Picture 1 (cartoon, rainbow, N blue to C red):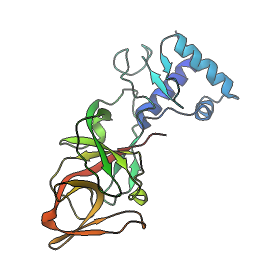
Picture 2: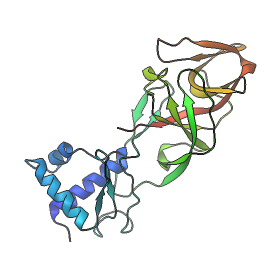
Picture 3: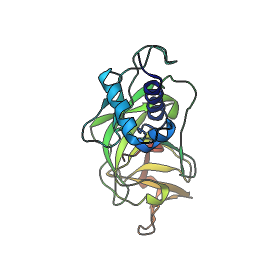
Picture 4: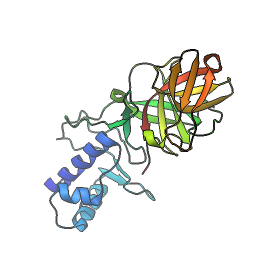
Length: 238
């Protein structure tokens, strides 16, 4: 049996992980539970660990994992599907390339997850080879991505920083062989090199635009470019 404060903290952490993929800070937990000091949060987390509801992941900042939920919670079943701080927030990218945070505050049930294969690295700078062998998988809330086949790529380079895409981010790509002008895409150049850029259609030509003034726009005849997919989201580790 959990105390009221233990229950409140566990459900608060659960909701934050479900909504953002990132555990709340001790300051956020202290404020949410209206406690005077962070030492009280430490004691509550220790108690939840001892009772088998929570686990701290070693050598990772703000890394907490929900092991199970109380029987009297509103979540279906006693055991929660975990979303830990090592899997950061997914932001859906709108048609203008801006990243808008996603949130779901209704109820305590965790959203279904699907495994998206990580296919290697993609350049946001000088093109490098992409779409390599599967190197990992990324759990993504099913409600945050659209229908169709998806894969993920790790970003290398900083040519898209003004679109909110940083070196080290993981982008989620919806497979497609076409895109609208203005979409951020994985573009294959001359069937040998791939890059992550904003695509602009200019008659029989295609421009691949960076989102960093240090990089030039590159223009190709349309027969030299193959669209490999369209950016629909990204993950970032903090």
